[in-house]
Image (cartoon, rainbow, N blue to C red; front, top):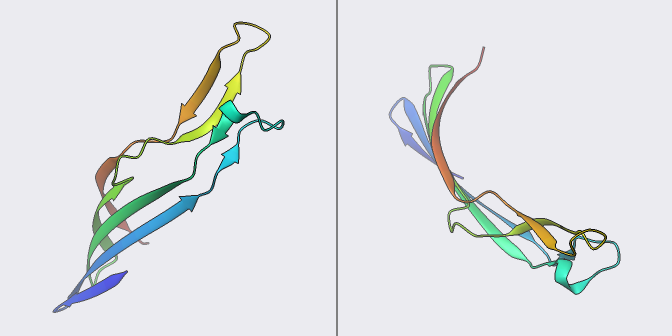
Length: 100
């Protein structure tokens, strides 16, 4: 996080990263249900007047739009298909918040 004073206001720039290592989605460590490792990066810019209780932010999550698996399961007793759930793709937005 890097803070930039703007007279009586403040601008903050923040970047975050997270790493998830290889793991298995099943207890028997079936290779097809191995989740590969990945990095995710986020960024946020916040404007806040110093004499007020509100702030305005612009943010982006999963900057690289990385496709990553968060869960996997099979239906060997039914169709024999394997299914995977993927993490949230890139998203961005704005927020306005206040403290009471």
